[in-house]
Image 1 (tube, rainbow, N blue to C red):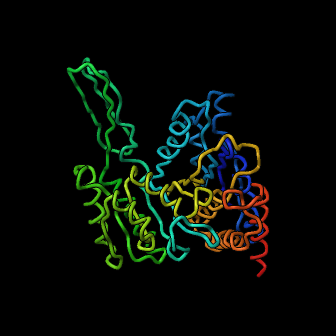
Image 2: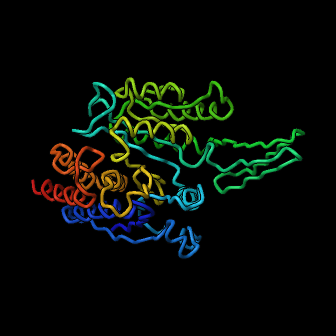
Image 3: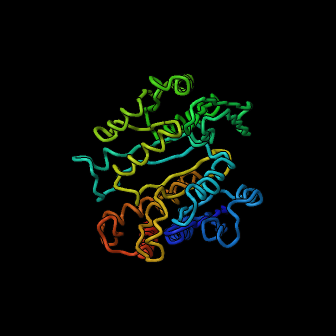
Amino acid sequence: MYKIGVIRGDGIGPEVVEEAVKSLKAVEACVPNLSFEFIEFPFGWKHYKQTGELVSDRSMDELGKMDCLLLGALGHPDAPQGLLEQQVLLKIRFGLDQYVNLRPIKLYPNVACPLKGKGPADIDFYVVRENTEDFYVALGGRFNGKGKEKLSLKRKLYDCEFDISFESSKKMEYGYQVGLISEQGARRVIEYAFELAEAKGKTKVTSVDKANVLTHIYSLWRKAFADVAKNYPSISTEFNYVDAITMWFVKNPEWFQVVVTPNMFGDIITDLGAMIQGGLGLAPGGNINPKGVSMFEPIHGSAPKYAGLNVADPLATILAGQLMLDHLKEGKAAKLLDSAVVELLKEGKVLPKDLGGSASTSAVGDEVSKMVNELSEE
């Protein structure tokens, strides 16, 4: 029995999560000794408007009791910019120390790829993004240059207290954002990438940085990568600058197997990865704590203008459920759900609008569940 915390969120989130839950229930019915208890958490804009609550400390305690979390989407045009992302999504990521963001970049059969001449055999790799450090540590601010501003950051993840001061005699406004990488934070996500490579039968791990210009922060990352790599002599390694890797993702995606990257660069290159795999409608992601509670989600937004219309593509959320099963080491269940999505796409009879079809959100979910049942009987 797995306890799965369900956060449906905003916009199309509730609809696509419904189909993911439906698909997981279909798998549950077909795989012996597998069962789920789905526990709802109401976080999102609607809940905040009604109660004034985002994610309380008590709620964090409850989330910490789950085996995994399944998230739909967050965001509403009426919400202050960054409120839901920072006070729900990032609070959960940081609070549960989900230091790995895992993004499979996989082109499925019968899905149009924008890259000429590339097919499913050419695009099948993983991006492992550090998820709690870099320029996302909230170390920054704005000041008007009239005096001195001092900012201190204290976080449980680190053993140090950071004091950073800025002072200027010019009367103009300044903004600053400071990136931070710790040796511990870098090593643990890089180790995850090498362990993933071994588990998936991959033979190469590529590191991403910009150490030639941002020397202090990313030379530490590069050193940590080189140190960790010594423990995995059977896996080859390479370094790529972030600007170069965006070029190679487009030109030769077949070159990559596992890519590990600091937080900000990962945020950028994984969206490029989503495009070369056929679009946001097929892109799942995992926020992972290998020894704690992990959260799985589609990487698309909440698309409020399509909310309630039953037209959104639920496949990314269904595949987030598949990624969750793989994380739980339920290999048979994960393979069954992935195969069901493959069969749906191969047949091409029940496709969502973003993939050239006309099927509704619920119809796509029904078809995946049908495929699960049919495949389990073979």
